[in-house]
Image 1 (tube, rainbow, N blue to C red):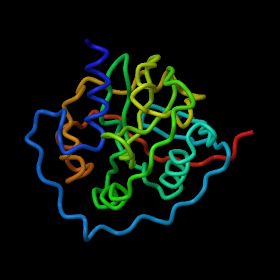
Image 2 (image 1 turned 60 degrees about the vertical axis):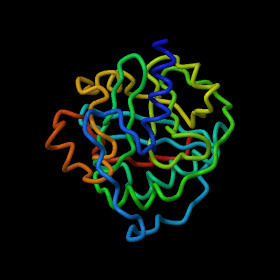
Image 3 (image 1 turned 60 degrees about the horizontal axis):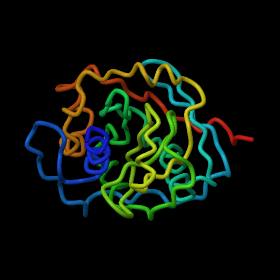
Length: 216
């Protein structure tokens, strides 16, 4: 039952109007005023992303053959500085670390209005793999999680890994997780880092995310 509950939390907490936090979720502002995100681009076959975090360096390798739509979206997000300043807002020990709600809420609204189609699951959700969160079929936008364990039950739920951690797995394991599920995703969407800095100041952050090179 615990494993089923964790999988459902991941599904619901991603891009849903529901919340796993304890706050009453505020309504998100109308999206008509949000700027359009940059044009989509095709990612290289494989590429290395360096995350400079508040705990140290973490490196991810993304393989387009695993999940091409997801890889393309992640590539575009990193290239446009989307993750710079973003917090690791959800840390569930033995399950996942989740990020992808930006410090600037206006930037988040721009990208969240452009969901991408699902990719078939071609690689299992093993420890250290990276995948997009979702709220159901074809709802992936910007939220990403790193598996802290072999969460193979997520394969059947349609979570398709795009890559894996190749450096800094110990840093990922050490990210601040005492807040658990409490940060309200709707509050992050509405107020960005101002909300987290006030209510959950100890959360670790991504100082910068950079595409280092294509991976051979």
